[in-house]
Length: 130
Image (cartoon, rainbow, N blue to C red; front, side, top):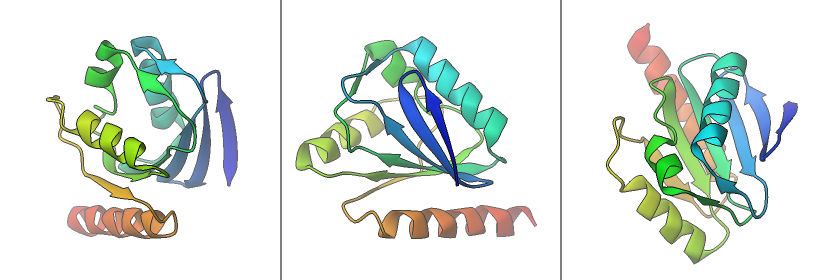
């Protein structure tokens, strides 16, 4: 495991094609932060890759960031680990926004289930490519 600190988030590389993302408490993500986040993922992970988004902290996105968030073609799947119903509702609202790339997303309240689902999604995409 490799842990990296961005000015607004911590990203833990769990595998060559899997990372856990923790946005810092109180952050409002903007388009510049989203771009830095995407650049980090592209530089550190092997595509296609998947993400485990851990919502332990309270954070938000400005409108432009919401529209541009996780639009990378290299993202295979995202598992969002939520602690509270409000996090779940916020994630569902964010996922329902129209965007250029539809998300392969599942929401989990049990952190142990999320990486297992992501690894199965990675296996599916690897088998389809091979």
